[in-house]
Length: 237
Image (cartoon, rainbow, N blue to C red; front, top):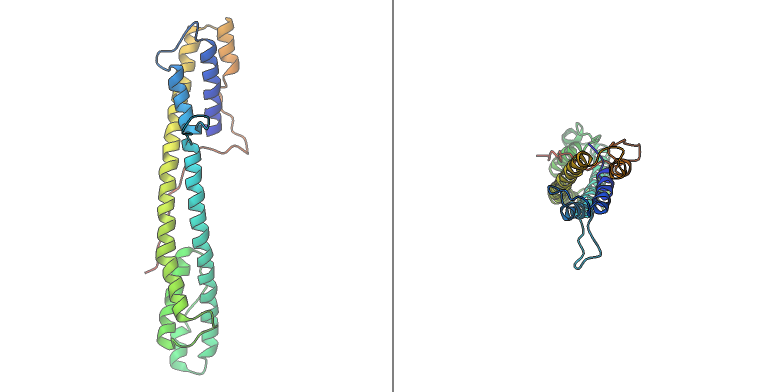
């Protein structure tokens, strides 16, 4: 798929060509105001009152909000994982002379490298901790009450917040993709009609063919139009 920057650039070139030809010919299917509106819907217009933000900026803001939510969730999950590793390791040492309590924690691990694994291991540790000795704390800041609150926050509040914001971003990115596809359809249709009207070798025909880029060549630094993946999150039980 063409990049969004290519589609916008081609639209700008198309509108400029259409304006220069307006005294001789106007495409009835793709009039200049329609092309301009389609472009403005994507990139916005800060010169009007009220300013038009454009779907590109709206989608970008939604993506930033989603990334911030994911960053906060991952940060809290990292803390939860550290507390789980700390608690499991110290509990095995603390209860080493109590066979009954040691049996509750001996099988526990804290090696999770994914969100679901971290949440599952945290739940397993919290359950064993509560049964072995809920009054014992690995450290003053790592109590059962605080650990449980952090795990619940990661499992419910932060996860739901991220999922909601990811869903909102996918919606806005989908709208942007549709607007981009509509604009490119206008670009292609106008160029097809214009090159039918003005033959090669005429000043108008050469201007159209020489100023409007029709071939998309992606570069390593080109950012494609957003294609948001689904949010795959599996909560612990």
